[in-house]
Image (cartoon, rainbow, N blue to C red; front, side, top):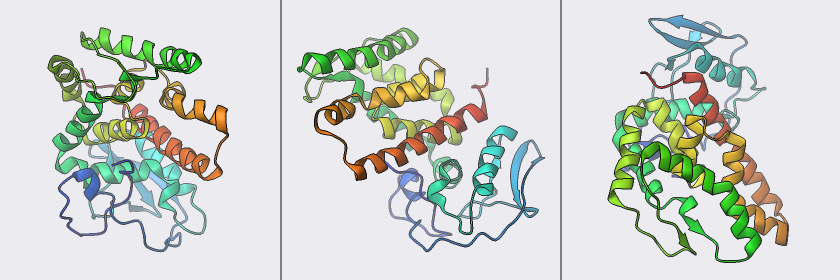
Length: 266
């Protein structure tokens, strides 16, 4: 589920019961031409909609695209406004994420939350290099403060390991992460957290960004300590760099949506 951002095929039902996968299957058709001139947002019934030449945007499955804040609606509107002669969904990470949340995640939030928990049980931040010393230091500098934040916030302890051998986290630790996710079951929020988790390989980083314990740029850099170390030793492949850039765009889109929908309700 590394790329959950692809749109649903209109009206199609999928055998895969994972709502994140159900919401990403299509996106292989030719790019449609831009059919609108004006992009606006409007508040209605406690929600906010995006209008294209006065007509409300709908998701690929035909649901109304309604957002909880004006700021979130403007993010989607800005992506529509930035399109050229054709509409390229790959340049619209926030719109794709919103479509995924409405058409897929809303149908089974629990499945998505459980996938975040699976990441938390094998989080990137737990697994440390045993050499060289410089890489060990870089990992510690980037990851230890985030783990310390999580341990303090969740009142838990994480078990770290050298190398890639699996280390079992205490049940109470994973249960605490699950409890932390409970008030985050709004489809937009949990979808954004899932994107951040899968793109970084770390549920802990995603939750830290949401809480403001680390900014998105620092989190992205922390998620790529190992990759950047290898690049420093062997150089960077152009195709890999392009893929990383696309992933970062999706990550920053998820972060922007989280900020736009606002803090958790008290």
